[in-house]
Length: 235
Image 1 (tube, one colour):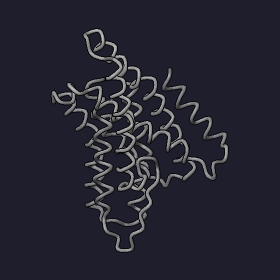
Image 2 (image 1 turned 90 degrees about the vertical axis):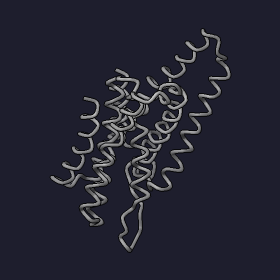
Image 3 (image 1 turned 60 degrees about the horizontal axis):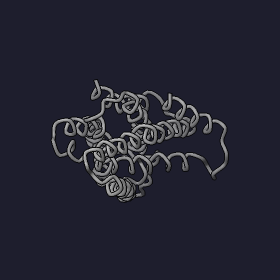
Image 4 (image 1 turned 45 degrees about the horizontal axis):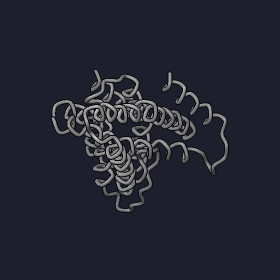
């Protein structure tokens, strides 16, 4: 069922854009909600679980101080990795794509970076079947899929390449989850891999919340969307 939900989130976004043209305001509110939900799940679920596993290791003789510092270092590494990925994806992970190419060449670097990002999103689900965290990924992928589909339609890219792109994008998170559940490497280094993904999620979610307001003006609809996202995640 995890795989079906992850794939359906992308299909829903493609169908939504195909049926109607979503307004920018609606996409911004959806992004704010998804960013708040993802941030809340990262802080309330992934972080405590990762450091909680360190307590278990400490009881078996591992150095808690050293491991805590390593986890912190890997979280920072995740933030840096996401910064690098965004130099190729042009910000598509948090709701906008900035590509100015008069030759209309298909953005393969954007394709590769977004697929890598989607793959990493699925990894924690491979060893944690928490339904709330699954919904955080699903909700995050819907506005990203809407933005991508709208971008491709606007720039009139080859439909076969677009179909290939969106299909691959839809399959990456299930692939990450599948490999994490089957390959010993992911389970053996679960703490450190999850720490990297925490860094990625922290960067994406905070950028979404900061960038979804125009001119950094206070917006009541956005604030309500953020409250809803955080409240539902915590509940």
